[in-house]
Image (cartoon, rainbow, N blue to C red; front, side, top):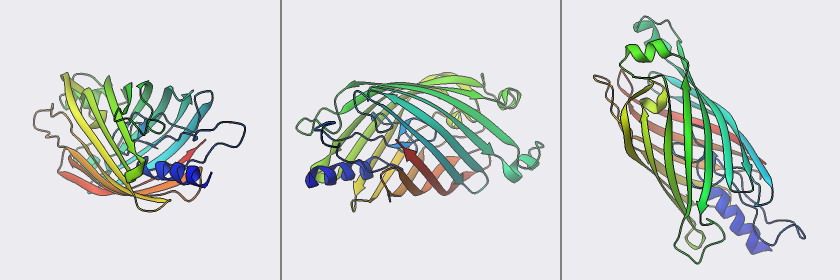
Length: 288
C-alpha cells in the first residue's frame, strides 16, 4: 500500500503546473490508483498551463464523476490576464469545461484610445474524449494516453478584433494530445497538435485558414510534493503588422494537500501588439 500511495503522489506532482496528489483507493472500492487530472490550462482543459494534455481532469475513476475548479493570474510587461473556470469529468473518459479569460490592456488601452484598463473577455467551452491508452496503468507499454478535444472561444469584442484585421470574433480549436507518464523515471511528457485560427489564444479573434500548431510539455518530480517543468506552444501569425510569437513557460508546482495545489511560473508569451510580454503567473486549483 505504501508504494501505491507514493506512486500516486508522484503522478500527481508530475501532472503539470497545478495538480493535486492522488491517493490509492480505499480498500473495497478499487485495487488501482485513483486517477488525477492535471492543471486547468489557460483555456480551461486539463493539462499544463499553456497546453491541454490527454489526461482527463478531476479525481473520478472509470465509474465515477470528477471535477475541478481553478483561478490563474498572469502579469506581463504591459498587460494582465485572469483565467478562471471549472470542469466536469465522466468515467475518466469524457471531460467538459468552461472558462473565462479576462485580458486587461491596462495603460495600453488608454494609448489606443480604448480607455485605461480596457478588458477583452473570451469565454471558452471545451470537450475532450480519451480514445486510447492509460497514462498510469499501462507502464509496461510505450503507447501513450491519447485524447481528442475541441475548444470553442466566444470573444466579447467583435468590433475591436475586426478593426485589427480579424475575420471573426468567435471560433473553435481542434486538438489531439498524447501523454506518457514514466513513473520509474519520475517524468511526464506530452505532445499536442492543434488546428487553430485563433490570434493570441483567441484574445484578438480568429483569422485565415486553420493551421497546425505544436505544443509540448515536460515535468520532473523533485519530491513527493514538488515538481518542475517547462512548456512550449507555437501560435499562428495571421494579423498583418501584429507579429505573433511562440509562447514558453517554466514552472514549479507545490501540492500541500490532496485537493489543493499552487503553481508559480515564468511565462514568455512573445509579442502582443506593443512588444514582447514576459512575467510571472500564479495558479490555484481544487480537485475532487
